[in-house]
Amino acid sequence: MNIDKKIVFNHFYKLRHDIRRSHILAPSFVDKKHAALVQPRWMSRIHPVYAMIFSFMSEPVSFSDLTKELSYFLEMPEEDIETLIKPFISNNEIAVTNYKGVANFFPRNIVIEEDQLFNNIVHYMPQQFAYKEIDLERERFYTAPASILFMVNNYCYTDCVYCYANKSVRTAPLSFDKIKDIIIQAKKLGIAAITVVGGEVFLYKNWKELFDFLIENGYKESLVSTKVPLNEEDIIAFEPYGIPIQISLDSLDSEILKQVLNVKSDYGGKIKQTISNIDKHGIDFQVATVLTKHNESIDNLKSLHDFLAKFKKLRRWEIRVGFKSLYSRGDFDRMKLSKDSINNINQWVEEIKKTTSLNIQWSIDTGEKYFKSEEGSRKFTGSRCSANYSNMVILPDGKVTICEQLYWNPRFIIGDVSKQSVEEVWNSPRAIELAFPKKEHFRDESVCKKCSIFEKCLSFPNKCYADVLKGYGDKNWDYPDPRCAKAPRFINELQAL
Image 1 (cartoon, rainbow, N blue to C red):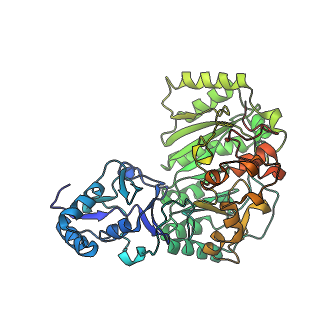
Image 2 (cartoon, helix red, strand yellow):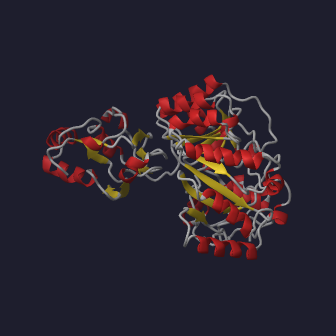
Image 3 (tube, rainbow, N blue to C red):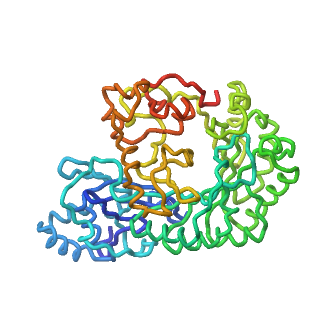
């Protein structure tokens, strides 16, 4: 640290008080120029005293002035203050402190030099983080979620055989004024991220106004995904937002696309032109390819590779194995890949990676994560589920569910933002009941009912209800997450193998 330079809280991160603790949150988007300086999607609970300390650095301040102010505020000698705050200044690694027996985690570069600041200053006051009790143990946020996923519609341009969306419900969408109100609520509540999805975002008539209003209120998408062929006018209109696009492209063969996506014969040509125009206008993009028996051939992958290899703004090509959906069109068992097919594709990917300039992302879900954990949800393999713990999902009509894959399943609807505030929905009786389940909520048929670690397991929210419903059916919603060693074997297979 250069002691002659002023230091400041890194306002890429957001401080938020949550009644009995405070949080450090970070959005998902950061531009490439500053990516090495921060940790996107950061989320950690901290003792409110630390948030109070950072509030004194809301604006650039000299180290000597800061130590004097904090010494007076905390009633501690300046020497002790220096020891307390030095681990946070230009920390290149995650910082960990222990306060009264509880670990507190801080992202890298939580405090930076003044000339490194690249986000607008937020003026925090120590009074914002006042508390009467401390709780650094509870996982679920008290006042409101850390993030919101907003589904603008459930309309699709295609009808994929592996469809992950519930397109059967047709309801009146929220007014744009109501959507703006929800965004304003989120900002006031300190919600760090709002993610916009469909259906199809580009089939939403107010998509430009929505992105404008989100950015105006400090929210920026990290990625927009689409299967819609975009005209050049829309691509030009989208370019200033600086948001990467993900294009889904399963094949270049019109007959295969008819089978997989149920589209007209000219669809492939339109998507190819869309990709060319996206690249032409300098927009970063990635391509996602979902494989089923219809498009599993190596020749199909080769043609896709040769087409994509010429684009300068393509950042990655994700090749995925189609997995079971709650809403798939057709029989999943008839379209899923065989073990031999997956092995052949894996061999081709490994070989092409040796010579291609493309960043190819390919992973195989072999199902090895299932039926393993003996210690409950905290030890489950794989990404942690954010459903009803740190995230909520607003459906097009304002109904709120815990997971985007569950859509309008009434068992998981926790409120309605067309009638309630975001805070009211988050703390609704149904939300609390799902977040803190009791044994009496479970049927005798569920092994959870008599499990000796019931409280230990479910006090750490990490249950994937979507996988439970896929594997065991809706009536068995109270079965354990299939990653649990006590979970019964699947009624319906989940993985492709």
